[in-house]
Image (cartoon, rainbow, N blue to C red; front, side):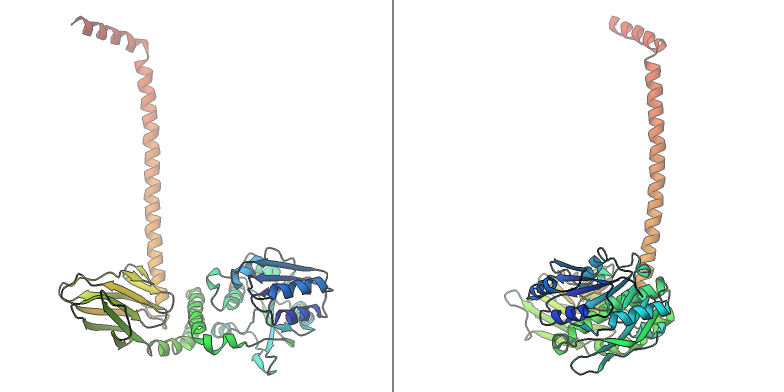
Amino acid sequence: MNNFVSVIVTCYNHEAYIKQCLESIEQQTYRNFELIIINDGSTDRSAEVIEAFVEQTNLEKVTFLSHENIGLVKTRNKAFDVLKGEFVLFVDSDNYLTPNFLEELVQKAQESQGDIIYTRLINPDTQREVLPLESFSLSRLFKSNFIDSCSLVRRSIIGDVRYDDYLNGKRLEDFDFFLYLITHKKAKAVPCETTFFYYRVLENSMSGQARDLMLKYYQAYVHILGKYVNSYPEEVRAASDLHFGYNITLDYYNQKVNIYYSSKDETLSEDCKFSYDFAQSDQINLQFDASVDQVRIDLSELPSFYKYVHLEVKESGEILQPALTNGYFLGDYVIFANSDPQLVYDISKIANKEFTLSYELFNLTDIHATDYVVNVLSEDIDQLNKELDEAFDKYTKLQSELEFYKAELTKMTHQYNTVINSRRWIIPTKIINFLRRKK
């Protein structure tokens, strides 16, 4: 049992915990490893604590890197450029390992020929399991990630696979990484029953930020499942039904459509607002005083995806375009990737201020429905790709024709020059010119 392991510790503002984390690695019974510590732009004393550890440690292979804050995903991806191990282990700086952690995981990898070796998580404050150990099941993994980022991974199975940059600053980057290795690289995931590591449940990742974390979770989970709609439809359907069929529906239909309005000299406020229950689709009739010249429509507080959102002038039937928005328009589609969707309209030049607001959400839950958001967008992308291919074919054909006519023109020019510079051409030309002068 002599496989070389790269242990990578990523740190951002964990001055209170990083020392215990590093010391737990220093105390490992398995010694054939390198330690790479990466400070991701910490603004506290984390860098000082790390430097002090590096100066006094008895470990032979230690590398300390530091850069400006770029996020966990990009930091881990940078680590792949410098690590040398046959196995890779990422450790978050607020967690710490039991002394036999590396030894047990390496031994399990050798005995089982596993590519991903995962284990239990224990809360050090309560000594209770944060994440129980489960036998591997792909269908179960789609529904709930039970493989923590602090798992031993065979370097050869990773190859050029990297963490998804889209998930930087969001959630579930480790779930996406392991799921890809298992589904695309046929990585073998094996549980290790003989050890565990300590996982801190920090207060700043709980109640106060729970709403923001949940929004990021939704964004990340939709993004990840969208990759597998065609290749693993049943697994994605089951996962969607479990997480989104209930959770998203509950969240969305407890939302409100808030419509703020103001005159030229006023600012938008809670005092001038209409509020309506949010629905899958709706038509809302609106009427404002003649003095109102600005309207802001808040379509819930959640990221959302619409087939259309129209603010129609009743008198003329004109569909107004927003003056400002934090969404993206793709034809009629409107995509709000972040929370607090907003559309701001200038209605100052409209005399009769009666409007109809209409909208319809994409289907977010039933992946087999024709209007499931991923299916619709995938079809549109396919159509755009076909149109792009057709345009490229036409362009290639025109280029070929251009080259042909260019060659023909060169040939004709050469023939012309050959004729006019020949003696047979020059002598008659001189006679003609002479006769012209005689006239």
